[in-house]
Picture (cartoon, rainbow, N blue to C red):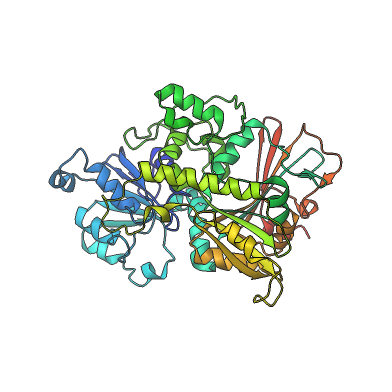
Length: 480
């Protein structure tokens, strides 16, 4: 077996586990790990768990040991594949490198070096060689897991999250009618994919007009047709507890696919490993949705709203956000039991996703027209906070704040105030997701301010009546 070029089954397992970890393991990186026997047959696969719990390497060895005694597991020849260099420092968990040295795989294949200074400081691949473990870099693993690790790497190396700037437009290119909100444009199949995307990001951000006109939720919800399908398959009412309140009549085929830790992937042909291809593919995979429901609370993104100092916040918006938080808190209290991990010190209230209000003011942040009464109303939302920002260059200020909160991947959903502010500061790793419905018409409406600059998409896919395109700012600059 060539450890530099793992077979397609290993690569597929690594990509699938990376996808499952994305949005779940943050602020830790979404690392994937696979153990194989000497012939390359997958024995078990795993990914990094939520903060305070096992990294991918510890989780994969834990799962392997479920059916084997520790002494037997240690004695069996095996190979280890990981998407990111094992950690070398003590955090909430012990160094994964120490565990690997103890378990002594015949080889370890790594896709990417960890840029975290805590890991770099103690980097020494020779310790593996000294222990009789062959150390390999895999270009194949590096390429296939780039999309999943890039948000973490961006935060560590650039002190900011990676950005996805998203817009959904009509056939004329408008994302909303003039002075009207809450207008659905994307089709049912796209809505399912976009819902899954919400579970993959760490924070969703919208602007003041979206708050006023749309009364947005921004939480991750299970599409109706998915929840009903899973309910019928499993006879389990829990699958409808957090379904979307909006029916989407998703008619695409949904099937159980291989790939769980107890059903390793075999005999596959790798086609596309990028995030957008996998979002579309996995939106039709009920086993992915089952994972999302099992860890529903931990796939919830932070919900962030830009508001200005003259804005009156509708009570219906506040009531909706309170309702979302109270439903999540009830679920946490009834279903989450953390006593099994003595190292985890967070309270159950701290497991609630944060609701963040970025209040735009003038240069003098000590004075504001935003009343203390309005602030008190917003702070009634459980686990909410208000962060005051200068209105000038507020985009970079938001990125700084989200970096401190451990946000790896930020999804910006509009409108034009945010589109203009963030388009101007996009970097080469950031992306613009442009979804256009070719049937729905909005003759007079608002178009994204950057629409005329979008050329040469690096990703394009038709989803029924919708065309999905993804652009990078770096490629746009080449067109000037």
